[in-house]
Length: 66
Image (cartoon, rainbow, N blue to C red):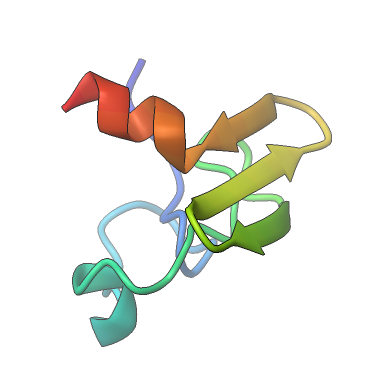
């Protein structure tokens, strides 16, 4: 399923991505499916983000997909 929203700005997909996000220094702040602001927890080993509608995303899960 294609993503509809920019995970760093909450705008419709295709908007600009902040420099810190392009460098991998910023965790996603918005849900890619609904554009809602997520609850983000930054840890020494990564981050986790939770959307109230679409569940949780963890940086460890993304590393496993690479």
